Image (cartoon, rainbow, N blue to C red):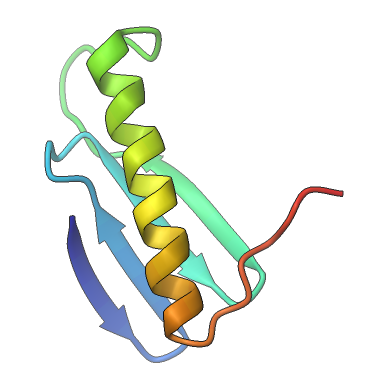
Length: 71
């Protein structure tokens, strides 16, 4: 996972380069970072997304960012 920290925001990119998360206080956005055809139902593609979300959540919390929880 690549981590780029900016004031008030952390950007995470999956090792496979297919997903990016933009995380701010109480908010995160999922961005498809791959070019060309992207199959959201493919196994490895979704595994990359799940792994990225969990790793980003743990890192963001360690940086004092409140991760949004389900309602």
